[in-house]
Length: 615
Image (cartoon, rainbow, N blue to C red; front, side, top):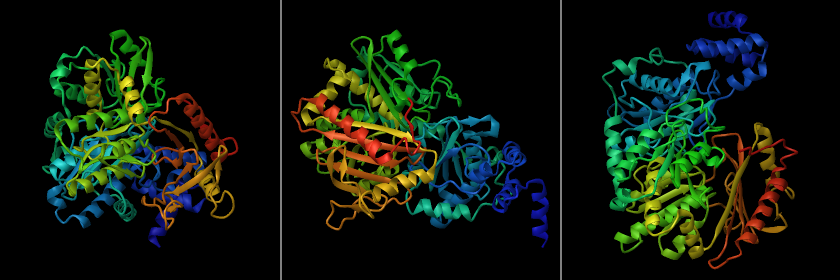
C-alpha cells in the first residue's frame, strides 16, 4: 500500500492522464540523477506532450548492426546517463555469468568526441559512467584517458585478453546521436545469442545501483588503468606489417590531404603515415580538431561524397595534393578522392575502393607467398561481387556475410582458428580491413595502405583510377549503385516489406522488375531462397531487420534492406559484366533504369512519404 501511495504522490506532480506513460514518467524521475534530462521530461509533462513521452519512455533501444544507437536525450529509448548505466549493469550481469574470471580479465572502454550540452551528455561522461558501473563490482577497467578510433577498442580487447569492450560512439551518424558498441572477447562485435541475452539482462537490471552514478570512481579506483600508450604503441608496431614499400614511400612526390571530419582521426592517421615512412599528410585545419557540432559539414559522413569533402578538395587543389583521404568521426571508415584533368575529382565508391584494396593486398601477398590454399577475402552480401570474381580467377577463397562488420569480424575469428589467413575484408559503406589485426573495419590502417598503393602506382605512372580501370578490364566491369530513402515511420517500413512478400498474392514475391524477369529471390528476414534445393537461405536469418535480394534475368542483383543504425531503407544494385565487355555506358544506363524501377515499383516513395537522399 505504501509503495502505491508513493507512486500516486509522485504522479500528482508528473501526471499526463495516460497510465502507461505516467508509470514510465515516475520510473524515470525516480532513477535519473541528471538534472538536464530530468528537466526535459518535466518540460514534456508540463506541456502535455503525451505522444513524445510515449516515444521516449515506453520502448527501449535494441542492438542493431552497430550495437545500441539513438539520439541523445531523456528517455529509455534514447542515449543518456541512465540508459548507459542500465545497459552496463546488464552487461555486467551477463559477463559475470559467462566469464568466471571476469574479475581478472576486465573490460576495455573507449569513446569518441560527441557531446550534447542540452542533456549534459558526452561520450567521455558516458564512458566514465560505464567504467564506474564495472568498477563498483570490482571488475578491472581499461579506460582510455582520451578519445580513440573505434578500432582501438577491439584491438585492445584482443591484446589485453579482456572479457569484452565497449566503445561509446555513433560513428558517422548525425550530431544528435550517440551509441554503445559492444565487442566480445574475440574482438568482434557481439552477435546472437549474446546480443539478445545482454538485452534480457539489461531489462532485469534497470534500477541503478548506488555506486553506478559515481562518475569520479575511475579517478580513484586502483582497478582502473589507462591502456592508451601501450595500445597505441602495439597498434602502430603491428601496422608496419601492412607496409610493403617503405623506401618508395619516403621518396614519393605525391602529396596527401587528410580530413578527420571533426572527429578522432587526426593524430592517429598522422602517426600511421609516419610508420609507413611518408611525410605527414596535410590536415584540413577547419576539421582536424574535435567538434561535436560537425560545424563545417552538412552531415559527418564522408560516404556522402564530394559535397561533404568540399574543404578537403579545395585544400588539396591549393597545396598540389592529388589524393584526399577522409576518415569518419570515429575513424573506422575511409573515403578517398583523386584529382584528374587538373581540376576534376573522382570520389571512389566503397565498392571501387574495395576493388583497388583487394587487388593491392593480393598483389603484395603473391610477392612473398607461392600459394593461396588458406587465403580468404570477405565481403558483406550487399557489397560488390568484384572480390568473388577475382577469387574465381586467382584461386583464393571468398565468402559473403550478412550486412554489418560484426558478421565479418566473427567470420575472421572463425577462419583464423582453423589456420586460414584473411587478407582483406570490406562492406560497401566505405568500411575496410586490410589484413586481420583488428576484427572490425579500420579507417586508420586503410588510409595509409591507400597512400602506399597510390605512391606505388605513381612510380609506375599510374593513378588509382587508371588502376581501377585495369582491374575491371582484367576481371570484368562491376557497375554498382547504392543509395537510400529515409522513412521515420516504422509501421510504414513493415508495410513496404510485407507487400513485397505478398506482391502477387499470399507469400508470392514480385516476378518482374523494370520489365525484366526476377529469377531468384532471397529473403534474409524469413530465411527463404528459391535458388536452394530446400528453399532455405544459406545466410543466417535476421528477423530483427528487413532484407530482400532479387536477381534479374539480365544479371543485375538488387537488394532492399533497412539500416541497422539510421531510419533508412537502403537499396543496392550491381551489374557484373564479363571481361572484354566494352560498352560500359549502355550497362550503366540499364542499371540506372532498373534501379529507378526498383525504387518506384517496390518502395512507392510518393505513396509512403519516403524522403529521398538529399546530399
